[in-house]
Image 1 (cartoon, rainbow, N blue to C red):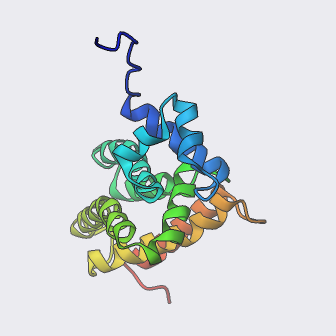
Image 2 (image 1 turned 45 degrees about the vertical axis):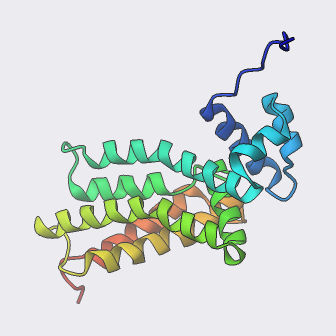
Image 3 (image 1 turned 180 degrees about the vertical axis):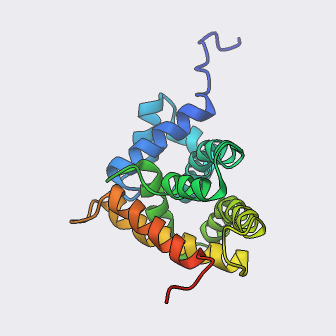
Length: 203
């Protein structure tokens, strides 16, 4: 006789990732258990492992989902023709930086960076997730250079420099280190980008 008990429907993809992002940001991946996450989602740990295979894969896919949400905003922002390229570069930096201490998106990045040296899968996934940020920034810098607003230079190389600067400013803010704020980080990023891209060299 067939089992007449109702089957519990699978949780929507967005709910799984949103719950995982919150749990990882609050407790860290080391303290997260599939059983605990499954309890929050009313799913079994086995069900989660079936889809993700491991906590590392869950971390990576949660980060990928998180960045996809932000990518939609980034593309719309960069396509805004009502704002000149320098304003859009400033918007890019603002979007890149954490909202403040404990920003769930940035805590995911910190977790990935901490685990990726020992996991090729995480390193490869990290590069794939970062690639759209790099490509969009390169296109923005090329646009500004073509318009004469930025000094001539290798756009890809300067994009790497800017993103490295943003990463360095972002992590202390996300971790809530003393004397670090989003406002100050954004100001430092803006002034550093202006100096790097200046069309004239100060006397």
